[in-house]
Length: 265
Image 1 (cartoon, rainbow, N blue to C red):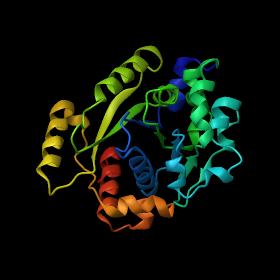
Image 2 (cartoon, rainbow, N blue to C red):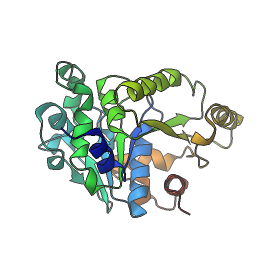
Image 3 (cartoon, helix red, strand yellow):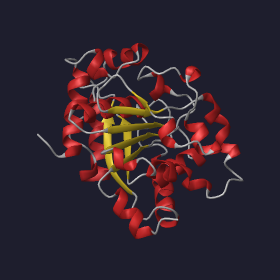
């Protein structure tokens, strides 16, 4: 067992984001894939951990989960080494720990497991020295998979759509982050909120953005992500937006967001 201070030292240089929001369809996977690709193109070695049984982050980066020998399910339930499931993406410096449909049953199968909330943390710790950034695409629920993601992370990144009910359910997510911080992961911080699906043509988007900024202050990134067709099309080609259409508004927005998070111009 690694002592807490040794563990903290070993992971201190790597930022591990749990991309979480219990609402579905709010751009978690879109943000995970495209932000990860932008970090990679800015010279960071990036691992995307697909923790969602729908495996959209995996397919969005050109992988077919049905053709893979192992997936994150095997890491969490069968102790397959993390390094054995990681696949390179088409973007240089970008790697994926893919999901599979089997993960849908992991919520139940993990219940009797020893140290069940720390399975993912232990798996990531075994490869952490190889990466500068880790992005965990959490499922749209607050079950054991998401708890694993929050326990493994150093930071929480929450995409919020600039539409009605944008803040709905966030209270429960914040309470869960607090529970994980107090009981499982004392270094976890809700550090980053990203406004997505922003439509500058509507007053509503501006009003929601103002409301979110009023609630969360400096945690809200200055860069917003616009609602664009090209962002919606890219996953069907198995590419991040920076490869699919590098001059599109979505590609420029995610590149600027990555620079903002990294603190570079």
